[in-house]
Length: 256
Ligand SMILES: Nc1nc2c(c(=O)[nH]1)N[C@H]1C(S)=C(S)[C@@H](COP(=O)(O)O)O[C@H]1N2
Ligand SMILES: [Mo]
Image 1: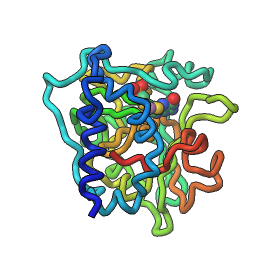
Image 2 (image 1 turned 90 degrees about the horizontal axis):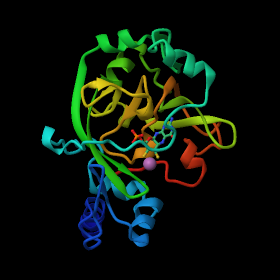
Image 3 (image 1 turned 45 degrees about the vertical axis):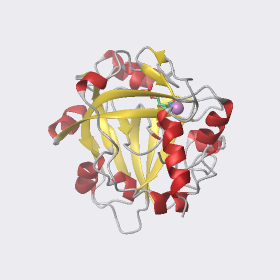
Image 4 (image 1 turned 90 degrees about the vertical axis):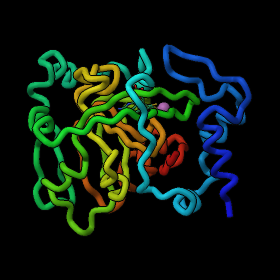
């Protein structure tokens, strides 16, 4: 029934719906500077999670692009250098002492070194990053599928969400954090990425490890991930809305 709405939203996201407003930003694309478009992208409330699910299968793959589509300069956004002495210590040592902690509602809590994550089957995909602020950027990401990591730690039946706790302190004092449900966690394009455009992930883009999702907006894709915890509810964390930006009013489900 709402098919035309979906088509309109896709046009907006592709920058086709708002006239000739697109311009290149270092190879990244301005979706639209039109305030209405930005409001539509920002609220996401006009398309509820249930409607979104009915319109587009959440398990469908996001489009993949070719090498020639890659932006010459990927745009960095949000934190670009965490103000955290422990993190900076890891960075000085090329993250050799860094460990990803994976625990919570799992049978087999475990710490992973960067080498251990690199030893898992690597996936490379060229996908578009869409920020709620109204820009998008195409990049090539390499990492382990989150589902391969979950297959090692073995989620318990009560686990419903994966929480991502990050190294960067935000306004208000607590660190950036995010959450996704296990259906998104199991999606084949959900990666724990350690490389961008064939290079070790630079600090500005979330080194040593950041979440990449094929089908959601940029703020869901936690950078500087230190700890993944499986939980049955995200209500007891932070402001209770499931993520740093969600606590400021953004939608928890940011599907594109
Ligand atoms: N830890 C952390 N993750 C974060 C952010 C942040 O500030 N801190 N910003 C988010 C937002 S709004 C966007 S658009 C993307 C930006 O990723 P990029 O720097 O690779 O473009 O990271 C997301 N993940
Ligand atoms: Mo963003």
